[in-house]
Length: 424
Length: 124
Image 1 (cartoon, each protein chain N blue to C red):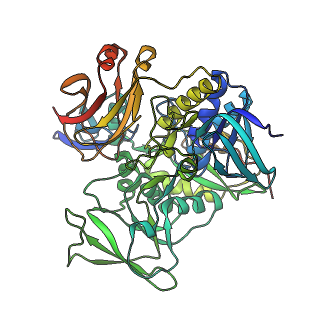
Image 2: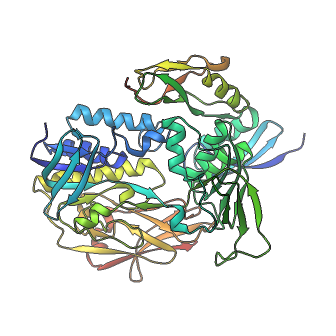
Image 3: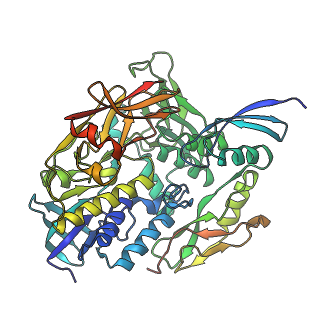
């Protein structure tokens, strides 16, 4: 039976949502509800049957569904309420939620605090504008992943995969396991966009060729894909004439990026960062709307689920504290500004007092890879606040740096902290 | 046998260290570039007995979905991957399935069990 008012309502039950609900309960929120669109909890983890989940925070190497199950069980034990098969239609800035489901009908709910954890969506053919005909056989990698791993059917026999993101590489291996031939993985960038370990264990292990600086310039076929035309690109991603190659195949998978899913955030009046596509957040994952928090791929796209869970914990803790009126809106915030070779930083702002409680972790992505020792530096103007040495930086791998508690005094003086990556 | 240098990428964790492995045939001499001890174990394994975790699906009767995902409880020898997949195609479970349930014991005599990765309730 649904209540009318909850301390914390979490939207989406992937790793971020599950963690947020668990931590909200543990922090003292009594009534915590998860609203989930699918018929079961766990989000996209249920179709990510490969292993590699939990190495950082559980010290165990688990498949996605097993990782999800840990948190599903914990949420259940803690008494988190769940509304499955339900769609949130609208959220007001005053934290009024409108949802609809086959089971509970139309529901209006009030939340003292909300955690947005809707995850992200795959970029589609339309968004990268591949010319050619429009035959059947063009799928996003995640759709194909669901077909193969959950629904139990193969979308094709002979594949070309565009994009070297993790899902694309993992699907290359998965399809090979199921007897398909993966002709090629094409990547428009001059570097791999997923994790290098996936290049080794998904492509190299099975002799699946990867071509960097290549893209699909045309899809060929009428009712079904018959071939794609691949082409090399120059430094400005323009096709180089004369490098075209026809690759016969019956299916093209797209693994060309993920976009945070923020329609609901927008309706709630949450301000979005055009670089990440997700909400601006502070160190407690609070968005621009007081009492509305966000965590996981809805904020920025992660490469490791472990860090999504961690962000969920953080948001859940903050949301519970807000609901229990312990969390005040920060009066003195410092802005975190991307400097040299940094595309974005999460959080965007930080309460200066937060350093009195704990070190504060910044997560970011670089623009260009540097395969050399670098410093990741946090600066107030020309003054170094803290720095960390790294052996390399790559756009496909999130960079983190902690601002230590001992930097408390230095941060009090700052209005803006800039983070940059420089060669050592 | 002469000393050789082989470059490997460690896949034990998401860091993905580039290892410079000095070896004589299958005998490991030294590893450089690793950030932790797992890198040495990985290099040694790649030289003598490369292994991989394998994840796939098996058929289920009477479940909410027609398949349940499965994984090897420990890495198995790389050359056996496709034999294992062929074995898994013969397996058919009856729902409900519990996470961690043994789907195939001592697969291909490797001593490694195949486990279900999720709960799969019975359904229509």
